[in-house]
Length: 105
Ligand SMILES: [Zn+2]
Image (cartoon, rainbow, N blue to C red):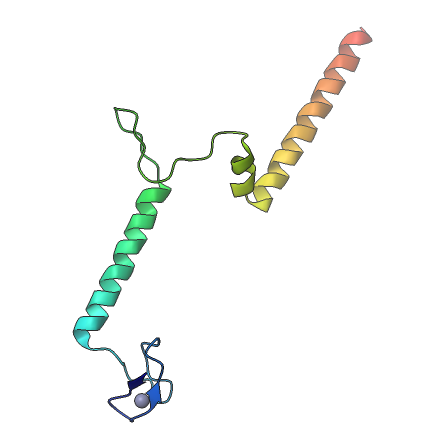
């Protein structure tokens, strides 16, 4: 629990702003520290998201799921799934059309 320095409201210290008057509940140094950590975690997430392969073969961050593995489909968004489904149906239809066309010649 923390007491607001401005209005004296006692509240959870999980919040950064007073629920009653909106005053900041952390010192300038604490705020700078928190924002710094937030920025660093963002950069870390960005670094892990963009995978870069080194000359030695090592890859930064988490390795991407290999193509067509179970995890690959789990990571895929619904939109991507639909796109893949359309692509496969389209490819299958194309193959059927080509087989029919070649057999009737
Ligand atoms: Zn307050």
